Amino acid sequence: MKTIKIPHVENLYFAELGKQIDFEIKRVFFVANFTGHRGGHANLKVQEYVFVTKGAVRFTLEKDGKKETIVLDTIDTGLFIGEKTWIDIESVEDESTYVVLANSIYNRADYVNTYEEFKKL
Image (cartoon, rainbow, N blue to C red; front, side, top):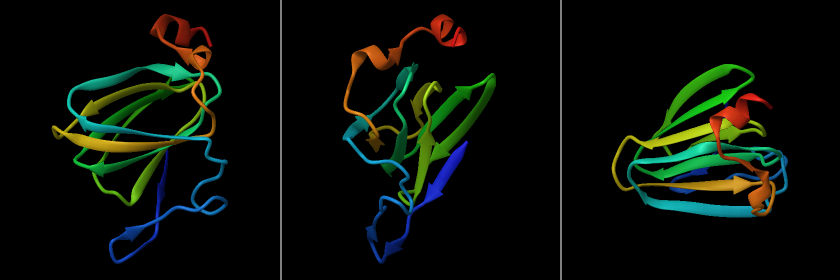
């Protein structure tokens, strides 16, 4: 599991292409006031960096038969999610918010929505 630390000056946090982020960002999305569970899918080609901006969120990732879990609860730590990685996401604190930087625009065909299909990859 790959995490990155992003620099900050006082309360300004930033990440730059070629330094902390190693792909061109083509989509940014936010999940706000998150309580409960999301995920339960994999992406065939999409790569992402995830940053929790409020609260705490648990990410369980599985790739190549290896499963790892991490809780993100500080804004200065980002989690890399590579292609063909099964993702499960749970809020640790209610009303959490996270932002995702992706290397691709949204494409429904890129999603693998069943664990059985994921295991065949």
